Amino acid sequence: MNIPIYPGSSSFFPGDTPFGFYDNDYQFQVDADKVTTFCARRLGYPIMEVELQDINFYAAFEEAITTYGNELYAFQVRDNLLNVIGAPTSSNMNHANITPSLANVIRLSQQYGVEAGAGGNVNWYSGSFVTTASLQDYDFNQWALENNVTGGMEIKRIFWQPIPAVNQVYNLNIFSGLGGVPSVGSYGLFGATGFLMYPTSLLIQSAQAVEMQNQVALSDYTFELINNKLRIFPIPTENGNRIWFQYLNMEERLNSVIVQAPSSVTNASNTNFANPNYTQINSIGRQWIFEYTLSICKEILGYVRGKYTQVPIPGAEVTLNQSDLIAAATSEKNSLIERLRTYFNETSTQALLERKAAESVARQSELGQSPMTIYIG
Image 1 (cartoon, rainbow, N blue to C red):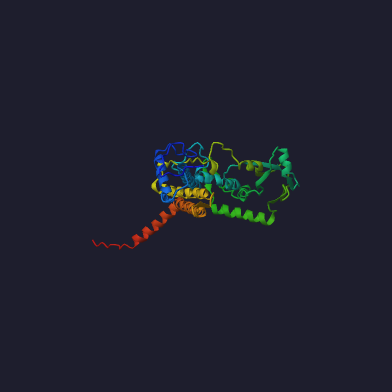
Image 2: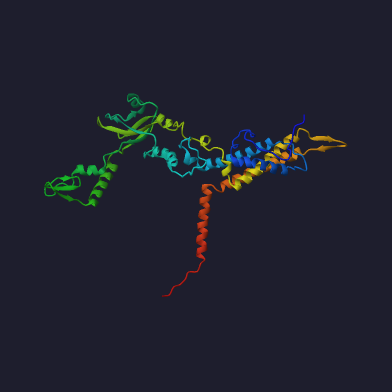
């Protein structure tokens, strides 16, 4: 079979590439034949034949552009994913200016708000036990059954403490008797419109005295919570009081982890970056694409020549360089990918901010070397 090989020139037409991503881009149409000539000459043409056809060069060119776009937009996703999660998947981000936002940082922090009782995305609920005289233990499982609470409870706070000392100060009425007039709170009342404020220091000392008296003479208010059983100290002495508590529903917290968002960006796979517009790729990117196209062509040519390791000619044999081509192509492709990733990483938001900070320090240092003029008026 006489399969035609590269004849020395080519003429690109839309439809000559496997996927047709860039076939209708005028600049791609112009460069396709130029890149074909470039690669063929770098592979030894016309000194030696190149066992490739123009469509092989076009396919390599298309692959190189797509690889460049993949690396570029993979970097963009890494650099901006936290800012674009939640954005509509219909938004094409190729040419979008992505403004940093704290929205998703706050979303990630909601879990801490839930635990601290200062916000978050899981509700806290309130409940209470009615105390019974001489009954020290109370069962949360039983309470949940009686109140139709399902999904599990996580107790966050239990409010079991003595009456605040300052309230007891008021109840003691220690400030009454000024001219036979009773006290109201921390104020002595004179008629309907007059008040006398007692010193705050006296209130504080009185409250501290009550607290010390309670600590020394009375049982301490505390509790234990073991296996959903609440044990309180001291043992209640009367019926009808309430022990209040706050809790969250464990099932609700688990459900809050997953929020369905079918039309929003949720991960790197549905962040809407499309193939690049070849016309808008600058000279830096195009040079990388030309070199990567050449490496792909070397790899293709190596596999083609690997079909016949030796070709008989009159009086001798010609050994083909299949292994050399594939080894060189593999090394060059890896090196080009690494070079591109390094370049992109050097232009990340973090790297740019660090560079600006270093420039600012260097600028201040340079200005510090300038002599300070002395003005004498």
